[in-house]
Structures are given as C-alpha cells and as structure tokens.
Image (cartoon, rainbow, N blue to C red; front, side, top):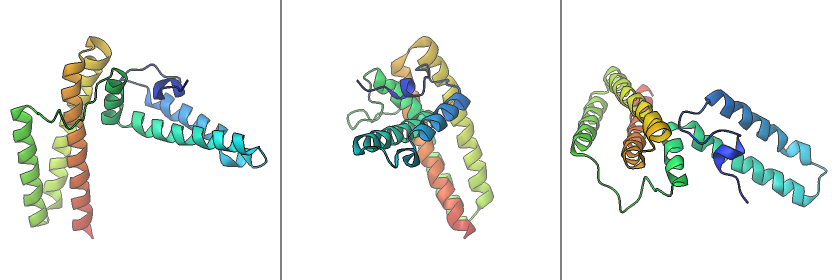
Length: 173
C-alpha cells in the first residue's frame, strides 16, 4: 500500500496546509533516507531508501506549490484538472490571459523591466486571490467543480509568471 503525499508527511489532506510542517517533515524524511546512512546496508535497503527519498522530493514539490497542491487534491477526488478533454475557460479569464500576454509582449519589445515587474505583481495578486478561494472551495465547501476551474486558472497564472520572470532575466542580461 502506498501513502498519498499528505500521509507521507503526516498532514491533513487540505489545501491550507502548514508549510512549516511540510518543510520540517520533508527534511526529516530526507535525513532518514539519505544515502550516507545506507552505505553498508544491503542493496534492497539502499534501493528502498532511494525510493523513499525520490517519493519525498516529488511529494514535497507537489504540495509546496499551491497550484500543484490543488491539482493533487483534485486528483485524490478522481478529478483531472488539466486534461485534453477539458480545456474550456470562462470568457473573462480568456480575455485576461490575452491582455497579460499582450502586455508581456509589449514590455519585452520595449525592454521595460518595470512594466514586467508591475504586471507580475498584478498577476501574483490574482494568484493570491485564487489561493484564498481554493481554501474555501476545497477545504470548506468541497465544491470540486469550482475548485477545478480555480486550479486551472492558477496553473495558467504560474505559467505566465514563469514566462515573465524569464523575460525579465533575458532583459537584465
């Protein structure tokens, strides 16, 4: 029987997790499964420790990121937030995406880092609002349909944020 990511770290399966507890429990598992502790151990124990460390890394990265955590919680409910058959987004969010992309392209063309920083701050504010909504949708209301929509938006916002950060790095070079 395999543990889900929350069970692995001894956390309640909710969106609003204590990040300090996640970090602490991750470090503990990493310490317990560190390869140096298994130098003289039989091959099966070494393999088991390596698998535990790999699982802990994967689980930590998934739960640490709010979008990935929401996606994982939905998967535990049998819902695939990102699928090829479910690509529909609300019209207002599609318009917002287009505005962000155009603003990014304009700022990159003008090599305007301040405009990109401002856009990034705006996008992060929207991401924070979505995260607050996800606490209610996933942890309180159990409204998985609305949580799926919010999660998809948050995943998109993460991608746009990454694109903007890359653009800023390229301009700063």
